[in-house]
Amino acid sequence: MGRALSSQTLGVVGLCTRRETDLAARSNAKGMKFELQVEELLRALKDLYPKLIQVERHPRIVLQNEEIVYPDFRLTVELPYERSHYFIECQNRKRSSKTVLHKIQHVRGKQAVKTFIFVYSSSISEELLRAFKAEGVMCLAIEAFEDFLDRISSTVRVQPPLPDPDYRPDHAMLAKLHDPFKELREIPCCVCGKTPADVNRERAKGETFTFHLFDVEDEKGRFAVCDDCYRLLEEQGNAG
Image 1 (cartoon, rainbow, N blue to C red):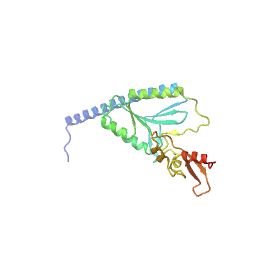
Image 2: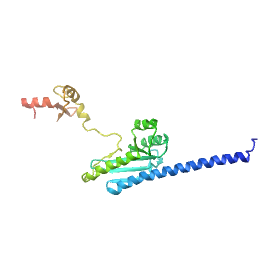
Image 3: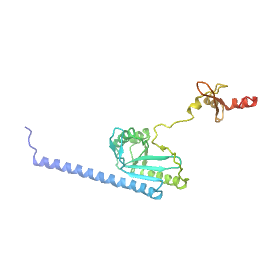
């Protein structure tokens, strides 16, 4: 059987435990105070433009695997051409851990919002900063974050009214944007056989190279003619 701990040893263990508890409590209080500071900045922006700015503290996010997570904040900005979404994480420690980065990586891969902002108090380690940048996470000190919100304010203050009907996409929520001109850019000219990339490489000034599309009754359904050949056909009277 193990020996019973002396009262002196038990007293030391209890003292260490209380110290750890006190440190954790102070750390949590410090983190809460910083989070409230960030929220104050966000709420001030929302109060200026209540119809264009949405702020949620600890939004309930259900991931694809039905796991529930709570980011610190979700910021939504209504722009004339899109609806932008941001998840915001805050941390106020002298040495920020990678826990928040792992949280962002986990959440980003299992739900729609992809744009994250990490707000810190005053400093961050170079190693963690490189890791955030590699993941495409915006890392902003509180002063830079305030400037970021000021720029949003400057934008929405002068923007035109929101469109009606509303066909705006949810920016940062689309994994891949459809490019309607991708196929067109890959079609070679049916006269000279050159593609847009071929002609742009030949033009020293890099002028835009465009096509005219024509519907025809073949298996592909259409073909393309570059501007130079189109003008030549027009001069010859062969272009409709």
